[in-house]
Each structure stands twice: as C-alpha cells, then as structure tokens.
Length: 127
Image (tube, rainbow, N blue to C red; front, side):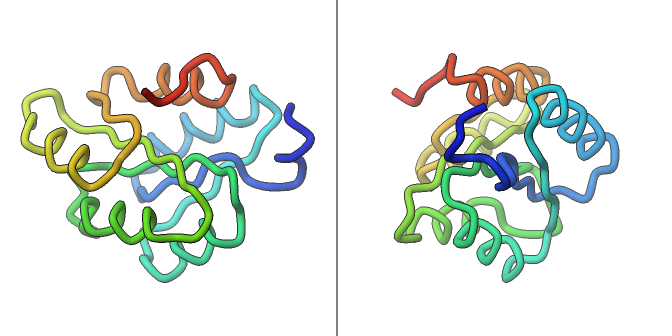
C-alpha cells in the first residue's frame, strides 16, 4: 500500500445500496484499504476535502443526489479528485453527462468493481 494513503480511506462512495457497499468494503479490505459511504452532499464534500488522494465513486443513476452536480462540485475542490461513475448500460445519456461534468472514469455497472480495483492498484490511469 502507498504510505501516503496509510490511515486514510481510499474509497469514498456516494451510495446507500447495501450490496454495492458490501462489495466495495470487500474490495478495499482485500487491498488493505478502507471505504466510506454517504449520500449526504455536505458530508461527502467534507470527506473528500479531508482525505486527499481518495477515489470517489458515484452512482450515476442515483435519485438520492444529483451525480452530475456533485461531480462538478468535487472537481472545484483545491485538491485534485479522481471520480469513478457507474451507470446502467442502457443509460448512455448518464455516461455523456458524467464525462461533461469531469468524471474521470465512466463505466457500466458490470465493469465498475473491476475498474475500481485497477485504479486502486495503479494499473489504470486516466487518459
């Protein structure tokens, strides 16, 4: 594990889906990392601000918050923020709006855990 990330959560996910939370906790644990979850916008922005270097994960089809607006807000942070957004493969409109909002990695639901692992392991970089 990167010593810079020691003691800091590596994943901050904006989801209340217990299945997704469980899978992300399992993934983080397998990599020796921590995962935090919230759908409260103020809490999310606070977590991201106080934990630089984290990967933020957004459910682009969420009705609990506006993922595009949240992504834009997070991108305005002083600290560069990497964001992974996932969406149902039939909702290509969500992919386009996420990319225009500055989401670094946009993948269908079926690929988001694999992509998350690759990003955290440093095997996948933006661009």
